[in-house]
Length: 408
Image (cartoon, rainbow, N blue to C red; front, top):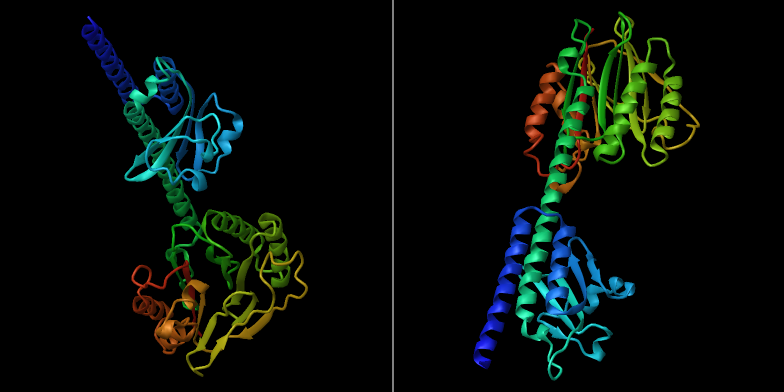
C-alpha cells in the first residue's frame, strides 16, 4: 500500500513538473511579455512548492532586480558583482554570508556566464524538518534557466528592433544631410569660375559642410565648415547653420557682419556645447577680388599657376560659437590676376596619417595642384592616392573638399 502511495505521489510530482514546463514553454512560444512570464514562474514556485519568498537578479548591461516576491526592499540594492559572482553552484545560505532570510541561492548560466541569481526564502518544511524544495532544486534551477533565458531573448529581440529602427533613422538622416551638400552639377562652371566639391562622410552623418552660392551675375559666395564632434547632434547643428547662412549671405552684406550674425545663431543653438570652424569667401570674377574671413578653420591653399606662389589663407578670428561675441573680426582681400586654384578642406583630410604616423597636412594638396591642369583632376588624383574613402586605415573623420579654378 505504501509503495502504491509513494508511486502515486511521484507520478503526481512528475506530472506537476511536466505541466509546469509545458505551460512555461507554451507561454514563451506565445510571446507573452516578461511580466507575465515572471508571474507564472512565481506562481509555480510559491503555490506548488511552498516557497515563501523569491527574488531574481538578472544581468543585461548591469545587474538589476527583475522580481521581488516577499523580500525587503533593501535586498534589491545588493552589490551582485562583489557578493554573488563567486557562487557557481546551488548554495545553501549560512549566517556568515550575510543574507538574512535567504535559504538558498540558485545561479543561472548562459554560455558559461552568470546570467541570473535566484534567492529563495521562507521554504515550507515537512516531516522532520525536510523541505520539499530540497527535493526539487534541479527542477527549480531548470525552470529558472528557461525563464531567464527567455526573458533575455525578449530583451535582445527588443534591442535588435530598436537598433534596426535607429539604423533606419540614421540612414534617413544621412540622406537628408547629403541633400544639404550641393551636387557638383549645381556648382558654377563658366569661363571665369569652376567649382567642385568632394564629400566623404565617415559614419553616415557628421558635421562637415560646404556650399557655393550665386550671389549676383558676377559674385559667387563659397564656404566650408566643420562642427566640433560627430554624429546626429553635429549634423542637426550643421543643417540649421546651412539654413541660416543661405538666408543671410548676399552680394552686399559685409563679411564681418555675416560672421557676427552667424556666431549669435550658433551660440543660441549650440548652447556652448559645440562650435563651428568656418571659412567663407566672396569672389567677383569681373574685378578678380576675393574677400574672405577664416574663423579658426584649416587654412585653404591658394596656388597661382603663373607665379607658382602658394598662399595659405590663415585664420583671423575664433570659431563660431566659441564666444558669445567675437572681439575682433578681420576680413582679408586679394586680387586674382592669373589663373589660380583654391582648395578648401576639413581636418579629416589634413589629419590623415602619412609616413611615420604624422599628419599629412597640406603638403599632399600642394604637390597635386602645383601645375596648370584643372583642380578637379588634381583632387581626384589626390583622393585616389590617399585611398579615400575606404582604403585608408587612418581615416577617422569626415573628409570634405571644396576646390575652384579662378580662370583669368
